[in-house]
Image (cartoon, rainbow, N blue to C red; front, side, top):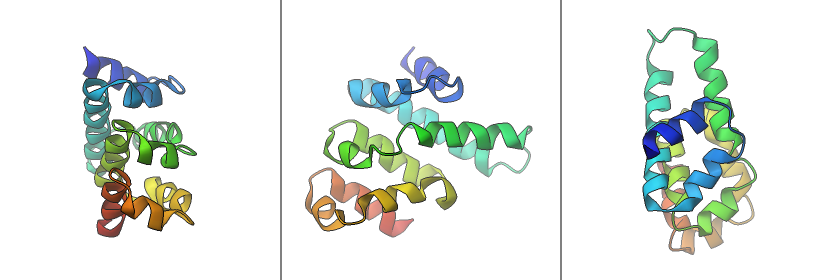
Length: 124
């Protein structure tokens, strides 16, 4: 049920709901991560129909995490979703993560959760 709820929030335009699920608990964070992984696979599929819709969905999903990266760095569940965004989505969708860490990258790299996000950025 959590995966269905996360998918509905991700693809149904529930503004802010995806962020709330990412923060709620470990199970809901995993559900959001799975929804992001699905979105990433669809974005990379050249046979995906309605390409504009997939791109719109991707923008809607990442939009729920814009201006929240520093908060996610400190959150025990939301940080995993930001990592998944970096792992699953192309650079044009996740460049905001690096932008929001500007000026705080050294702090994030030393943080117990933030270091994971910084590492994903380096790999990205």
